[in-house]
Image (cartoon, rainbow, N blue to C red; front, side, top):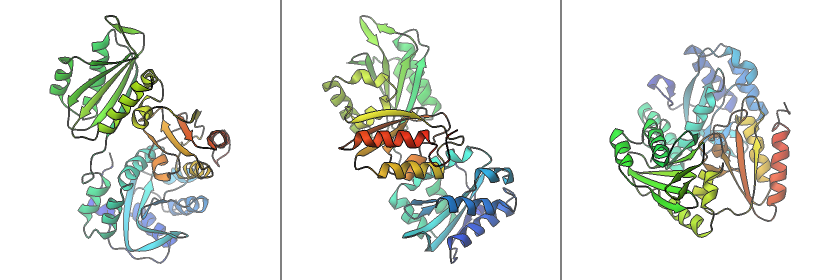
Length: 366
């Protein structure tokens, strides 16, 4: 979880160029004891490789892997520029978040920031904020509307259906979605059988979200197979689109596919359509800004709608043409990305994306 203090927020700043903005942030990171003085060179070098503008008036300048040795401690500084800075051609930044990261911790920071900053209303509030607390609350999600969350529990060593449900409930509880009373209520309930080995349990909770649990071995509940347990934690009506997709999957005879690697993506998108491929990221530092931008660039070369899910992350499917969404997947080296493309050039799109990933997304094959 991103934590910010008031002294990390620089309100009402005014500089002429993005280089000045980066120098300002680097100086503050240095003053705070987070980095050595030379870290600014890494931030400028990163910018020369690829602009770190995310969209919605937000930029996230950070150093290169070559300057990580200058980072003493992971942290951020946030500068607000009410008058705006031309970060890249035609792109105006009103808030810049300078990031110092010793290793891959920044992917977690990026994931939280991009999740919050994807909200256009939040971006406008950041631009117009007149106090540090408002910016802190927006960036940490304190004022953001809760979105539906997704968790997986793969290959859980359950002996029966009830143990699989207990594992899913414990996973939701550990994520802070509910308490011990929620777990007890679930264990006293009777999950509904949807068909094709898929079961559904539901509980009232503090956070709306889904847990997809699959067993490590074949299970049965009486005469019925148990290949997947879907746990719905409901705090509001945000889960209704996924329930509709479940009905569509059942009608299309595709419920069994929920037990596969793309289960959560199908829960969000509904019945499978188009073409799909799964590729493994080989970049040593995962999809940080530069390779992430390269992936998005390749995806945008095709007309097809392209969605991508991190099978080793949340499993949430997002647009492969949105840099904020792609970075928000928190992809590290070795993570598997499942792509689904729908359109006239879907086959060419998946081929192009696969070749780009194999080539290292601009960082060379390793």
